Image (tube, rainbow, N blue to C red):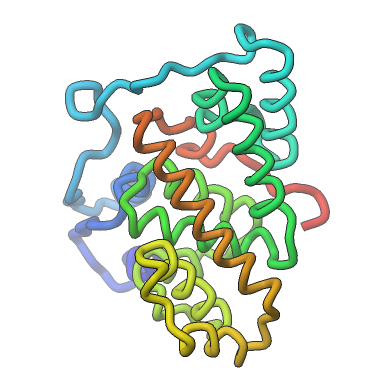
Length: 242
């Protein structure tokens, strides 16, 4: 992806994309006007004959009971989204689940000691590793909204070990390992974080963030929820004060 950004300058005539599928349309659209030949490893967009219909339909705001509407409102405003995403409207059929999910998202992702943009990067890395397309696209968009540099995002998606910030790199690698197999974590894994100055509270927050990402991946994949247009088209704006 980093080479894609400078392809015009180096005289490349053919571009092949083997990046995550949610990036294909945007990358191909950017390359074609420059006269490039484009080869895409997988499909450019979701089609009903290739991807399943959602197993659980959305409970739109207009049909939702008042208590569920309240969750929707809190979710999209605190997350700085223009509207409630499919993620929470799919869960709206159960007030207990929707409210429970939002409380965990609010406390673990939005609040806490570790900046949200850092935790959004963990979310992307874990979701990509677990091949959850919905969560990868949604939280990649959140990273952009929160001002994460394009080159940093490229490195995150391409190869976490190439991230320039050593502390950030170790935090994300720890989070991914925790999400894959928490029983595989060793004293050395924890010591690496402590050597970068992370407190016990921050380390526990990373463990909680890993658990949240896996939880969200399961909900998104089990229900086969559709991607949100606002994430696909990058319609979100950076919240004030960030």
